[in-house]
Image (cartoon, rainbow, N blue to C red; front, side):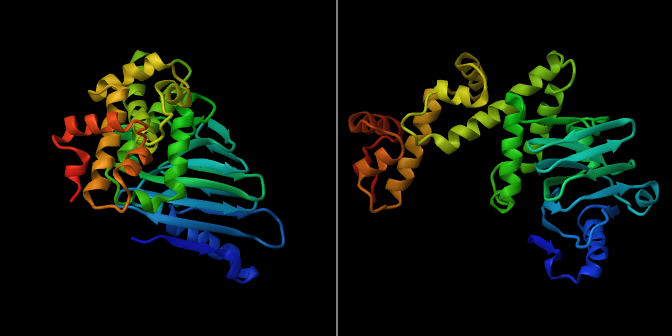
Length: 311
């Protein structure tokens, strides 16, 4: 399905809030918004429906959005909404819990129980991830409504950066090789458990796999940088180089082997497709700074020289 955009700019002022209520119920679940007393209501929603989750960006002026028992009775499906604050703030209440999200923090609300979202500032924006409740409960856990996490910790920074990247350009992930839903749920579970008052050993063990995935993803994006080092990557994630090497043990390769193999694979791809670049230009573009080293490594990996590899 393609993205759907709803912008109130072209809607007659007297009809805007009624239209807004319909949009919220269409994109999310049955909801009861209430606007602040003001002359002109403004809001916008961009929705990207995927096969198993929904990814949307929502913004408006001040308002509250409630989910009542009556609303719950009108829906057949239940969802957990992961709401990442981009601008402004939101006070979320569900059951006996309440929390306030500011930019760079997120919280979760469960559509199977009443909740209230109070957006007290004009010009607020959130990224919202709509996840079937049974999927969220199975992968992340239950009783996590209105628990917050954010970029204030190394773990939270990883999660917020990834969620922001997905929400800012979700279409680029539609045909990605990664399992988007599982990756999001793994990272959210890691962040919520790490932010719990007393994360135990089991929760700390659950940190490693998603963090390893995030580190490998970072290397995938930056392997061509000739100045990339374990120390720089470790600093990016707020961990020590020693812990970085320990994480990568699970991938079966050392940091140096991962970088070298990715560079060689990319160079082989460029050379094999008959690019107009010279072999040395390809090597330098993807992180090599010594042609003798490049040629020897290429021959060890592919059995022939770069020149013979070229069609």
